Length: 193
Image (cartoon, rainbow, N blue to C red; front, side, top):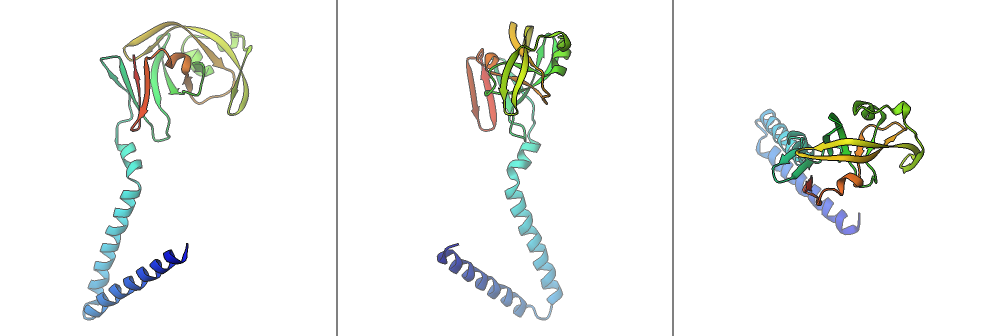
């Protein structure tokens, strides 16, 4: 704090003490009632500050967190409270939850999701290498018969299965660039074909 901010703070404290002193002087006869009113107004004030400070978190929790599929080949994905964009797609007919990841080159399946999609991870050749935030991991190239996202189905796509543990499969750029436009604004990711 510089000297100007310190001076303003002292001024506000003195002004506040004067207002509080005036309240007590005016209501010497009914001190209990004055303290009750002051406590109620204090709680209202604190509640307003808390609601203002937490408004974005509250609105993200109340707002529906599901994907909207529009008829014109547009998919709108709201940002989840953790800051990621999640979307459910069907891989070889099986439902799989993906994280939309523009930083991932490939479509990456977890071992669990690969099994859900009808692949057998134990029989795959983990000969590829990928650099992740956790270091280098081994990957196995696979070919997916179909990937369906909303009303759009793509066939015969390449992907990789990650040998390391991952919480979600990743929908990377090799798939996302099939969409004509990717736009992120106002807490939504919009895919347009």
